[in-house]
Image (cartoon, rainbow, N blue to C red):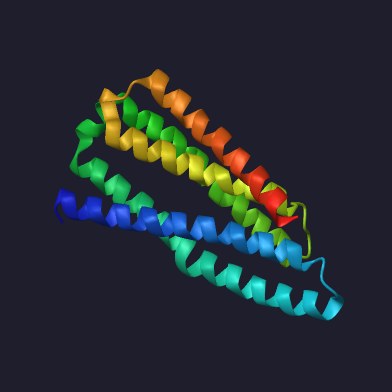
Length: 176
């Protein structure tokens, strides 16, 4: 396969991985909130959320993560000069953070399946924004590459984070 085909497949699986990461946390929020229902509804909803979470994780999210890494590595094999670029190592840092996020989310799912609910719905909403911040950072790093002004990029990154937190607080107030 040529570089552009591998790159296209990498992007497709990145999108799939993020779709799974975003949706799984939404399911976790609903799963946590279902614990406040009366016993019969709580049981029915929890059983359904466990099925949905398990299928999303095992059929879409984790395979997409693996294929993202496979095609990303393949791209580096086809174009090794990318490893000479500073921006690539910053991207690797965010990928490492994203992998940490993936496996912590997996742990949350396994805990919920055992009836252990350590996270509140508002904490999960904030947790969800970490994936959003990683996505924003990775896209800007890859698109702007070496031309990126790191000071502006850092300020922009934190502005997005603060904006997301403000929107979450507004959403919380509107829900009440």
